[in-house]
Image 1: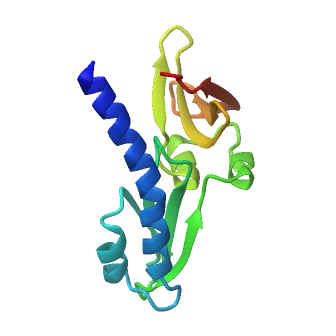
Image 2 (image 1 turned 45 degrees about the vertical axis):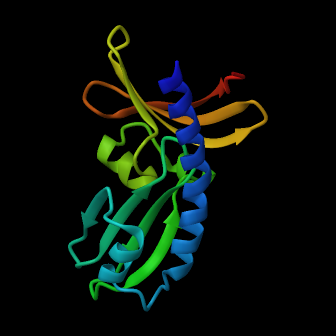
Length: 163
């Protein structure tokens, strides 16, 4: 009981603290000036890195499962910051299409908040928390078949526990 209470309190503190840290750290990143090495020093190591054939690189910084943002940080071939993007947006959700691969979805939206497999339906579901309002958390869902291709998308919400 005590362990669950402590875990809940620490999760709440972390969820409240991380956005404040991001705000401070993101303000230090200057497109056209900040290098990859400086970004790593400010933000820490990325959870995922994608290399392009032209030498540009994208780093992923998810804030899931508790947060409602995932950042992609883009660098040019010169290893200088080009852009910082918050990718959990309605525009990006609308870009998810039937037939896309897991890799394509991950690259578009970043690390999901959760991943589930439903053996009776033979499908995987990834979701991302999009917002918390009133007494509910809202999620964007992507459904994959067993070959890892998108079959559909949807949304759901969960009631926040009252204690």
